[in-house]
Amino acid sequence: MGSAEIWEIKRKVIEHYNRLSYIYNALYGYEQRQKINEALKTVHIKSSDTILDAGCGTGLLFSYIANSARLIIGVDISPKVLEVAKNLIKKSGLNTVSLVRADADFLPFKNGVFDKAFAITLLQNMPDPISTLKEIARVTKDDSEIVVTGLKKFFSKEDFLKILRESGMHSFILDTDERIKCYIAVCNKNDNVSGKSINNRKRDNTSLMVVEVNANAW
Image 1 (spheres, rainbow, N blue to C red):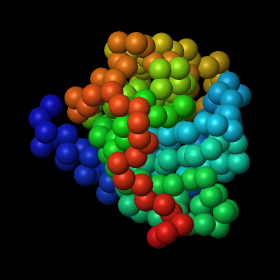
Image 2: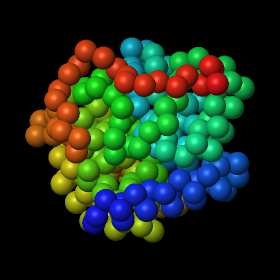
Image 3: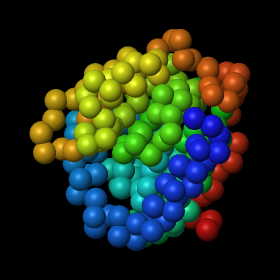
Image 4: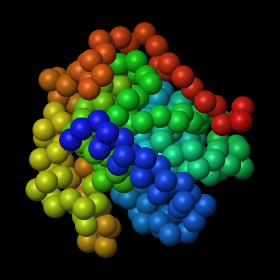
């Protein structure tokens, strides 16, 4: 797939979520909350955790973990959904949450800085899900947990597991209610992807962010 084709896909994703931004929670909020609840039965947030929410959308995850984690960084490529997430942060007083507009394939963070990462309903929007997961793995610590979901209408279970495996993840899929529309995997980073990236960045644990947009300053 050429770069022009890749960016055309991403442009369409931005336009799609910009259009849906103010009705997204009404359309998909219940479904998203089901996934979050299931994931948090297995992944336990610590008060020392710095957490990445890649493809954070309207910020539905934030209310579940903001009072438990040290810092949460929500990343999304759609400016309109980030506006909705910003309003949620302000309304709810979620002082541990900051937002960054960025492409999940090119995360503006140094290597190995996040204790946990979530990629909920992200992969179907990415032209190369394997590269996306490698990039998420790059910015997480070696012992981190990474929660990844895959829409059942978009991925077969076999294809979803293959993507996780080829991205270098050790993973298991949670046993959930059949009514949940996603496979939910909890992954650990394989040593083979530690410090590697589609951007060829060298491993450096000294700093968290290249750029941070704090919602409270908007």
